[in-house]
Image (cartoon, rainbow, N blue to C red):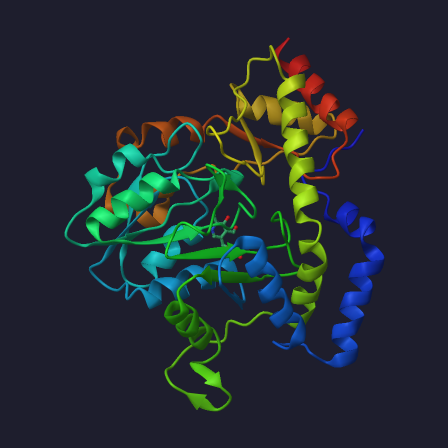
Length: 365
Ligand SMILES: Cc1ncc(COP(=O)(O)O)c(C=O)c1O
């Protein structure tokens, strides 16, 4: 049996007719950049997210950078982020000339809220919590801290479309939020794509301007912006997929339960969810001993795995100058050698999940 890590073709085959027809519409109408498909996706996604404004852009890294620009982040500023994330979270801060200030993660791999206040200085401007692997960070606590210290909060929702904390959907807590629609994400385009969302009209207007060369009206450039627009083809694909993302999320959650069921008694640590949270399992990350041995064994059985991510951000070569040590981030440092992402997507069958779990059992037997 083969169990790929993700299977985007299986997803395409399920909705082939609808997707092909949506893409043909864009080609027939020549609405390649911006246009009706983009506007309709922005409207549909804002209903899904629960924010008044959604501004589509080219990718989830641009969306973070644009939002940081709107909050005026620049040289000398500090922005607090978790020690575990994809590089975009810290890179967007560094490219503004500011410094990412890392905080260790909690047992859910999201920022440990009990350690945030220790990291606040007179230079701190904001916090970017990351809903890593699809699990919502403790947003109510983060917003309390932000309010107390007058900080902005940008939620990095790249991995967590539809996740909730305490029954409230992520992206509706912070001052603004950032999404990625990279193909492998829970809601993925057929290339790079992203979006910003907010309830604040002024942030929304500025975001729209920056993402489109500083103009809201054609040829009236109120500021210098950049080219970060969503292509019509991606918007059309996203509009089709958005209709099914809730169904897929429930399938991902069912698959996570099946993994937990079939991995009972196996010496691995399975992911859990905060009380009242809705984890959307962009990734199903376990912790294991002898990771290299296990992944090689799984590969020999036709099962693909991955590591998200092998090096916590503070220990990346590009941050060597900050001089961080493992003792500052004990959870992230310990997890780095043990985390392993198992195949996870809506189309996985129970037979495949059982096969993965049995293959892991076999390795540790
Ligand atoms: C947590 C996180 N933030 C930001 C991004 C950046 O998104 P993009 O790849 O669309 O630029 C990603 C994408 O992998 C991500 O996982």
